[in-house]
Structure formats: structure tokens, C-alpha cells
Length: 126
Figure 1 (cartoon, rainbow, N blue to C red):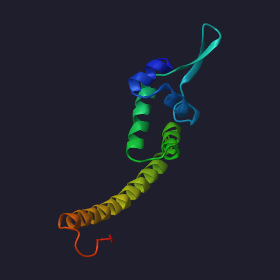
Figure 2 (figure 1 turned 90 degrees about the vertical axis):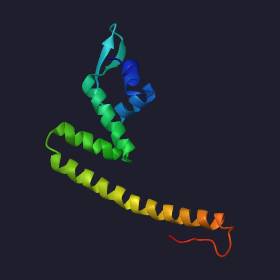
Figure 3 (figure 1 turned 60 degrees about the horizontal axis):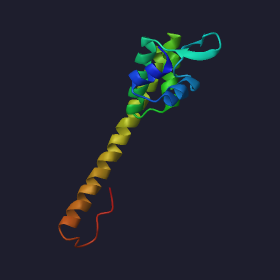
Figure 4 (figure 1 turned 135 degrees about the vertical axis):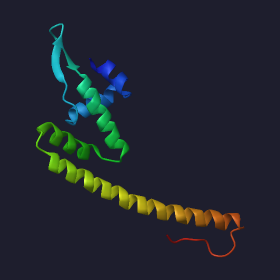
């Protein structure tokens, strides 16, 4: 399928697809339509990869982190490196979750302080 259909099926803009191609995340076949106009030919496998890229981004992974996983997956021999990268990202998310929980506690304290009339010193520590 060509880029417009591919982008529509993936729920993204064609500029996003072109960016992913430039970044090495997607590697569609290239060819010529009518003998002169270059085009990108995407497959169902590319669509699955796009969904994986989107899932990685939803997990908070950067494009370079996702590219590392894509490259390792393509090589077929990067299972250990992929596992290590995913475990590291999981730990990063766990640390972030602890920080977010502390922020929620502080917000709850400040809200309770304001609801009680803002008497006394404002909560300011995690």
C-alpha cells in the first residue's frame, strides 16, 4: 500500500510516516510509479511495526530507544539486547511511578489544606 493509505490505516499523518522512514524505524520498499515518480510501498508487516512503534511511544520510550529495539528485532539475534532494554525501561517507569505517587500525595495535602481554609503553613514537601 502507498503512504497515504498506510498513514490512514495507522491513524497518523504522512509526515509522521516519512519521519519514521528517515529515522530508520520503518523500511518500506521503494519503487517508481509510472517510471519516474518515487513511492514507498508498505506492507501489513509494516503496519504491525507501526503499531509497535506507537505502543513504545505510549510507554514513554523515545524514538532512539524504539529504533534500538527495531534494529535488534530485524537482526534476529538481538533477543538479549531487547530484553535488557525493556527491563531498563520498566525500571525507569517504576522510578517515575514512585515520583508521581509522591506528587499526588503533595497535591492531596495542598487540596486538603485549601479546602480547610488555607490555615497554617502550606504543605510543600513530598
